[in-house]
Image (cartoon, rainbow, N blue to C red):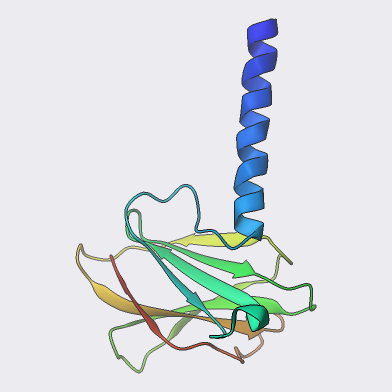
Amino acid sequence: MRTTHRRLTSVLGIAAASASALALGIAPAQAAGNVFEASNSIISSEVTAKTYFAEDGEILTALDMDKDGHGTAAQWRYNSSSATHSYYNGYGYAVAHDWNLSFAEGTTLQIRACLQDGSSGTPYDCGGWEYARA
């Protein structure tokens, strides 16, 4: 019984630590290898949205960094392409949402973070494009 309690406590502790890390803007813990990051501001005090791309597993993550009532959008495009792909996260402050994408090994892409109001809304207040690699 005591071993089961310790295991449950450990699992709950890991989950709480992961949630805290995301709330602080630390890259997703499930990702091994390189994790690329983009935010919607170059001034850390004004960052309200972050996007991560994990090289291993090609996981795109959108994270809401502010209790402002706006959702976030994680965007990606192939290197300098005009076609932009956008994924909306409306789950609220400090809640990350992941999408499992699929790219050929070594593909170069760009990511950015934006605000967005509603799933049918248009992304706005986007940060600059950051390079990432699958």
